[in-house]
Image 1: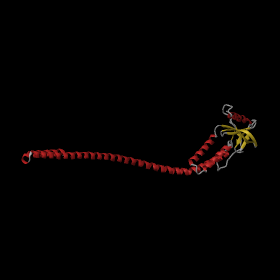
Image 2: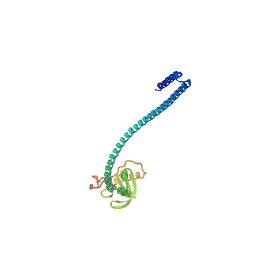
Image 3: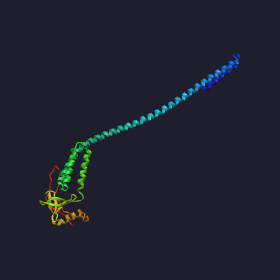
Image 4: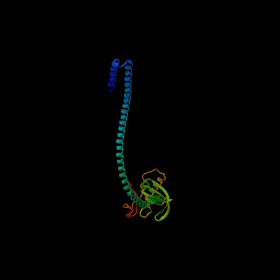
Amino acid sequence: MYRTYYIALLFLAGQLLSLAPAYASSKQAQSLASGTIAVEQKAQKKISAWQQEKHSVIAQINNKQVEFDWLTHQKNKYSRYIKTLEGNIAEMKRQQQELEMIANAVTPLLENTVARLEFFIDEDQPFLSKERQERMSNIKKALADPHLAQAEQLRRVLETLEVETEYGSGIEIDSEDVVLEGQPLRAETVRAGRLGYYCVSPDKQQVGIWSPVKKEFVMVADSNKQAVLSLRTIARRKQIVEVTPLPLAIEVTSVPTPSSSVESVASRSTSPEKE
């Protein structure tokens, strides 16, 4: 368009120059030519301005297209995020419902566990009685505390169960006031886990074993005294640990529970037969 317009102006100027002798003087021809050139220059300026405006508009369109593409990408990305979050929210609601159901069942379970454990301790060998009773009292206070989280209540109950379980292993020796065959006695007590609970008089002449039925210590047979004394020496770490045939009190024939009575037979002391 620009080239066509330029050629037309030149042609018009040539025609005017060729007719100049007939219609005007040379000065008039020059004036006409100058006017034509001025018009062409103005047109050129307008064309340049239009070209600049065109490039500017095209650049703006390109920028807007890039911005539109970016916004479209962001929209799609956040749409995926929203769907993921909605799924996570639904899963969290489901888990919350499950936790509420578990929470409703945890408290009765803990209370029942503590009740059974307390009954077990009452029926167990009376070692560390003060310490164990104090621990149970603290556990019951914890379960009755409405400000204590269920997770903390559960932790304390499990901790107590762990301690009671550990009592089933190891050897411990202590000095206590006991009752041996109905007679009070200050003696050393030796506990071999929960396998047996024994007492030894200061002169080592009287050796007893705990009777779950009589709730006191009863004398062991003379043939079994040395085994208990050996266990006492091992507990004091004055003798190398070795297999020791200990006398056992076999009395309980059924597992007692808080709601059932304890069936038992007569107390007797036995020791493993030698092969």
